[in-house]
Length: 198
Image (cartoon, rainbow, N blue to C red; front, top):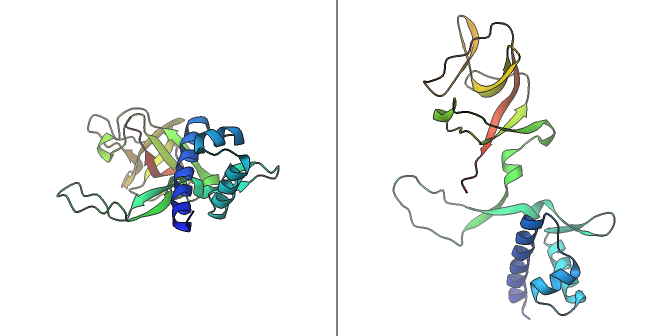
């Protein structure tokens, strides 16, 4: 088998592993891999796994088991953005790889996902059920969308300041501006948003 054909097959094998992992949250056994990849021997499966390890898609645990590497979760991203206006020509072969977690989260140890409840920020594109990617910090800048604690209640709003002090702005005219009766504390700053449509 040519090197080119082998590389194409390995990408197909990787896609099979990624689909299996997405459904089961574990890599398949050797016996299952033989069936999934169409091989008659464990040694052929092992060679595929070793090639994927060489591509940094798989790695070995301290116990010697196979596990997904960080690159296993890379997804293709088009180098050309999709306009929301006039169409542009598409080049489906041009793409780079990106890990969504790495794209959204710069400081994993300080980041938390918080599910949004309600529609007070809908005009900022934040909807009920979205996952807010929030970086924990106690300071924020005016205009930041923050998770704040106001009078012992958590809320997601835009931080603002005027002559009367700091306050929180909704992004929906049906909701009032929040001015704290007591203390306003910053829990974290919104750095990303995750929404699932289906």
